[in-house]
Image (cartoon, rainbow, N blue to C red; front, side, top):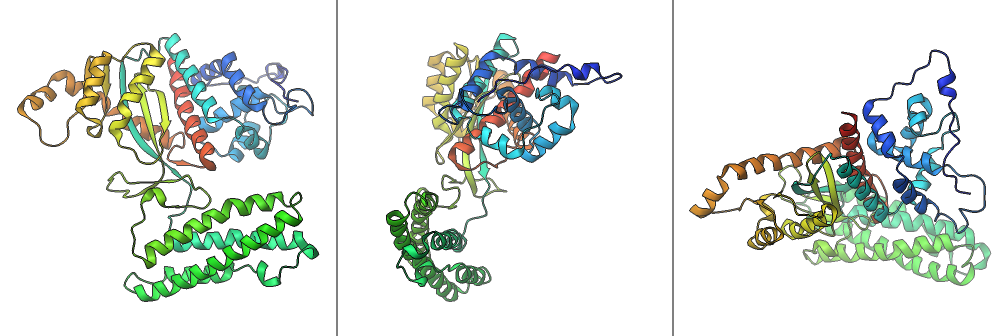
Length: 458
């Protein structure tokens, strides 16, 4: 049964000589999280765990505790284990998370509850925080600066050999489990369940030890690795059919695993054959760079220190006060200039009026974007034009208000740096597409809670 909160316990105040010193920012954040609308958003998602979560069953971890512990996790960029340890060990955090002297939920429990919160709920959560900031006059939305960044997924640097070896490893160990489950119910030979992981690992090590000058030797090892993977794929196809016929109910977990990873292994085989043996340049949209995080995009932004990044491009719109008013996880690697108009539209929806000043980098400049902002009513449009400029354009960009806008816009790089270093948006530690969007959402919310807490505590 889903509980809303623990009964308030004032025992901390009754201990002689004990004073709990909570920072002014944390006190303000504590008051913000008391908002009923924020509470209901999270509660509605947690109520979807089971059909009768609200009515029957043992008492759950309270919604209030889950919400506040997730806030602490992302405010201080902690793991689930570190969050549990910090809350259990601190009277201040016990009071903030409304745990009091009750048992602190363990990391697996907190993780299960966290995975129920939907990405669209976090978008609404962030909009509510922005509305609270507007109501408290901490921002007016007069200045909007936008920029994109890349949040990486937690994967190893992808190579064809490693992807093939990962495919053989996952499918091979699942075949071993399938053999145990089927037992005497199948007439498949012992060879059908053979785990070829050692052969794949050996070939991968040999490929890694070869230089690019040894192309023929490398192709020879790749042929060996491809044959090993193809043999494993054929085995899986036969065993999968047998599982579905013989033990569909008991083996649904194994069936799901094989149906998930079999197409990915086939895609890795296809791209390896095309690239290594046919010499074809496989387009990024057709490449798989991880069999565990297949949603990962290949992103090249021309950065000198990071030629290629693996993750997702995230577009941010920041207003004065340090608030990220909007964020969007983009699909693929779209051009930056395509994000200008949607960002201004969302700003209009949130604030009910256009910003007085809007700015972005050179890659966003276009005549259409400037015209759209002018038609919308933006007074100061800070879009420096790349490349060669006419004399009239140079004079336009030399105006004092334009340079001031450029200096203000430079702060968005600092904001991105803060949310990466302080709130963990450099690399996503969640799994799956929804997990990725959830990670980005909580990172933005942590930034805005910090800005809101700082503003309310002054």
